[in-house]
Length: 64
Image 1: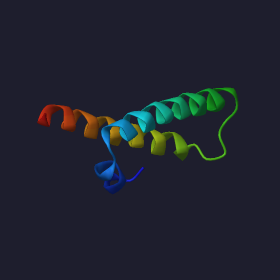
Image 2 (image 1 turned 45 degrees about the vertical axis):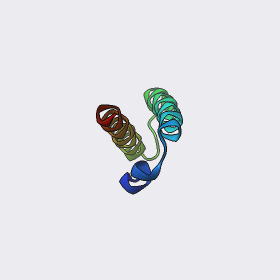
Image 3 (image 1 turned 60 degrees about the vertical axis):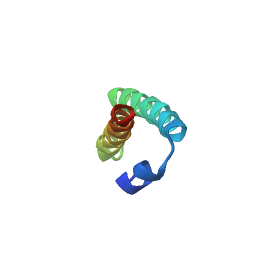
Image 4 (image 1 turned 30 degrees about the horizontal axis):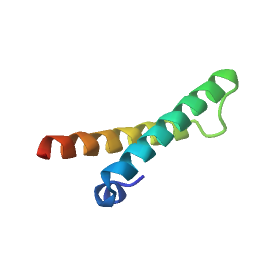
């Protein structure tokens, strides 16, 4: 998820996307542990997406 998409999303959407991304990251890590992923960069991309979403949620909480 791009930063511009994160900024435009609502809090509810961000929370849903965060839980989906965390689940996807967990699944990717398990798959990578069993057999190497074809594209291991996916792990980095999902991890950074989780960080972007979590940062935006924290920022919004502090503003309120």
